[in-house]
Length: 328
Ligand SMILES: [Zn+2]
Image 1 (cartoon, rainbow, N blue to C red):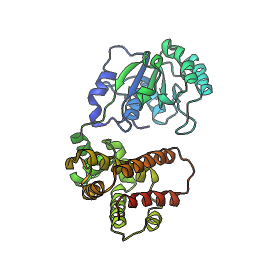
Image 2: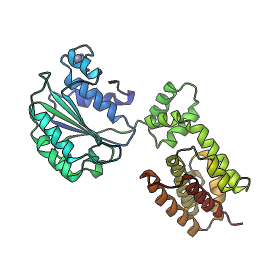
Image 3: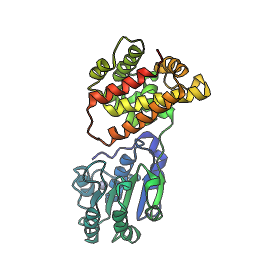
Image 4: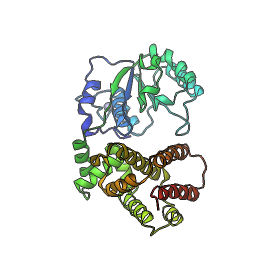
């Protein structure tokens, strides 16, 4: 297990590790891709370590070695059995009985709950008593990307620690250190595509997002010039993740609607599509834009929920709608 912190987490770390007395439960919350997991891992290692050095886990003691091998018996993780699903009440009950036993290494026990919003009302209620009066010296670390979804009773039992995204400047600097082959401008583009999260930007780069974006933007331009048909493009884009395509088209629809209302040219998003969006927005009917946006949002939800749909047909109908925005 990795216990490195990101450079933007120094003061966050200080507010956790620098406490004179540790609380029973912490809730680390903030936008996805801000590094909450790394913070929780580092904190868990620190809480379990037998001889911390300068407010960090020593990396040498028996607890640190067990932690590094991900076999520490007093570290328990509570997660959904399947990504995107809820945390089951049975899993919570199992956890509660585990933390009632004495710690095997004679120190603290640490429970990481991620994501905390995946707990159903029943699961959350089953955990409440343990959160309030933890057995022995158990410390709960709850991670949440969607703070507003959590029950007030859960929030009120935890020390709340907000984990914000780093500033754009810090993000670009960090991204450039990770990917020295990229220009500052490319880093800014990927960061914008990743809604400001440098960690998500890195994942997008792994998926070769810059090349994909270029391909899609070129395709959209060809579509409007009638150099490509919706079905040609749907085939050409078959291997591009649909989440990505729907994200982009939803953003473009939103930008066009905003332009239609405000005529503010500075609010047209990334430079690669500004001219196209402005051109289409000024010619398309407002009702057509609104209908297209509704359709996109509805189908984006289906894509995110992995509703089985024929990918080629879905893309083709998206592109037919898109093409129809420009009156002939
Ligand atoms: Zn240690």
